[in-house]
Structures are given as C-alpha cells and as structure tokens.
Amino acid sequence: MLRAVRNALGLSARELAELVGVHLSTILKTETNRTRLKPQTMERIKELFRQRGVNFMIGLNGNVQIDVNLQAIKAIMRSYPTGDLGS
Image 1: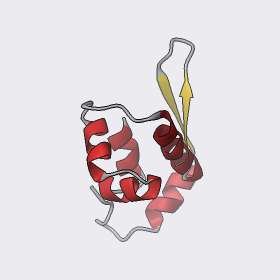
Image 2: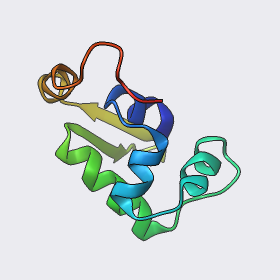
Image 3: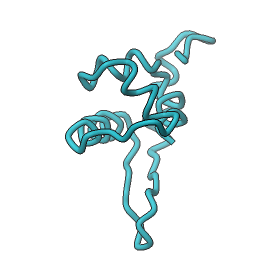
C-alpha cells in the first residue's frame, strides 16, 4: 500500500526516504514487507501524505483505510512533467 500511495503522489522511494529522514532501504524493505516502520517514522509518512491529500484511517476491524482528496492529488500530479512521476 505504501508503494501505491507513494507512486500516486509522484514520489520515488528515494524522495520519500529523504523527506521523512530514513534510509532508502527502510522504505524499500517496508514496501516488500521485509520490515516494519517505527511508529515515529510512520507518523512522519502519514503527515507527509496528509499534506498531499491522503489520509490513513484504522477501520473498526483494524484494517487500514485510505481517504483520498482527489483534487489535491490532481494538483500535485499537474506539477510533474508528463512521464516524470518517480518510481
């Protein structure tokens, strides 16, 4: 889920790592379920995503749900040149 949201926001794994202050390998390992983020790192990612129009919520069954502000994401996507959405 982290990779999907990151890609939708046009962020590379390296950019996300730099923005939240972790090593690139931490993001990559998290995206492939080889490690779990520390709570403070997850909070930094949640805040970064929230600023860009994506909110994470915990459902009654404990599953993570995503609330997306499509207008915010469209505005962010317009700021990237065509084909330059990161990886």
